[in-house]
Length: 348
Image (tube, rainbow, N blue to C red):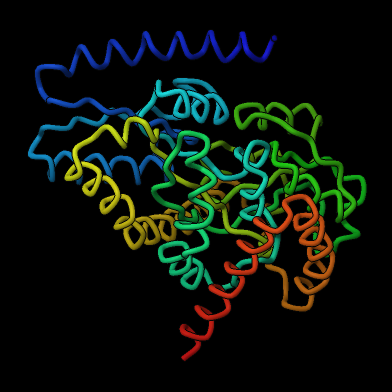
């Protein structure tokens, strides 16, 4: 009941805010659409949204106006996902991890060491995957959502106050994770204590020693200043930070076909653009952190060190298969095949 009341209040607030936006832009455009982010201004998602807005408004000759709402404006990641399912929002970023509680199969995006250690390969798969855009997408439609695009924002980086170079180093470490059961199982398998916290609560939790570690791409660690409270950054290549862009299905289905095509083609056509953005942004933000805090230690795990984590991580793959049954297992198998084929392609 408490959760329902929280969602209801946030939805009512969102409706009032968004209605005001629609009234303000009513004379300038025939359609006013909203997109909510899981990140703040200046982030990878913000850059994607700005470019998506530019392309859509240009292609529609100004008939469409898109309003961007950075993280926190309309609530948490879970809140904006709910608002998009309920039709309060047209578009939202929704990290698959947040959907794993309602779409268990989406937990495959949180499994460690499924993806290639080559980000170019991962970009290609995320742009062209049948496992994602056909099989996984069907599960989203059951939640009144259409999965428009999946892409990564760079490697997930562990931050901590001690070295994390082998699974045993995680023993007893309190690490913040999103609410995805698979993410929790990953870190429990390494021996860590997984702690669920909202993105906005991480800094204070580090400051108050409520958690010992957390995981974000380089750019997020810099913009949210998590590195100020940590001594080590560890690149283990266990998982890229994968995000998705969703649209309310009823809204999408109500549009003329030319608008549907414009949305789908624009979203799927952003992959190269955002890959270059995240690459530059992550490199730039890492340099900024090291300049601001020269004592910060960056550890990049060797293939041998990664192998020890991979061995443990694959026990969680088995748990995932048990949890999701035949449907999820088939999607995982197809995705693994797509990744292997792409690795061969890029190795040539």
